[in-house]
Length: 185
Image (cartoon, rainbow, N blue to C red):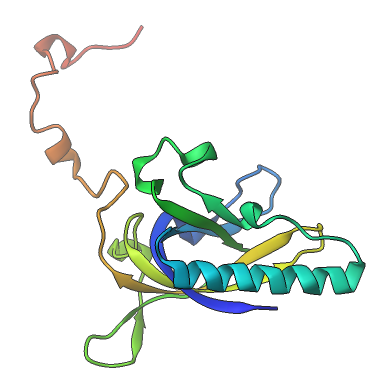
């Protein structure tokens, strides 16, 4: 099973708490990783690993396993094409039923320390290295498993951020005095 370390931009990170995306009780830790289309070195590594996984699947079952576009999706086409942050990128959808470590490098060393959800340091838009496995799944497709994550740098935050309620409602021009004690009927 091919193993890679890939660097990219983090999208939709749900890596601290598993989510039941399908409503079927199958909780997963997930995120997407965007890779610039001009990063040909990493794209070629992914293509090569995909071909190896396809071959492993074929050797095991004598059936063809999946298409590259099912694993390495084009951000300029399909579901995310209207999101400007996906323009000029390919992306991988990564998942694991087990929680994976999320760390950052301790400045000036090769050591790492954990990042917690509460710190807010790992967010949609930051850069990260992800350890991932590409393999033929039991469902006849090629899957990409989310492994340990190391934050690689800052980026433009793609979520609503950590705005406080007092900051959000500081400008109360939308509010009228009649609403102060109004009840819903």
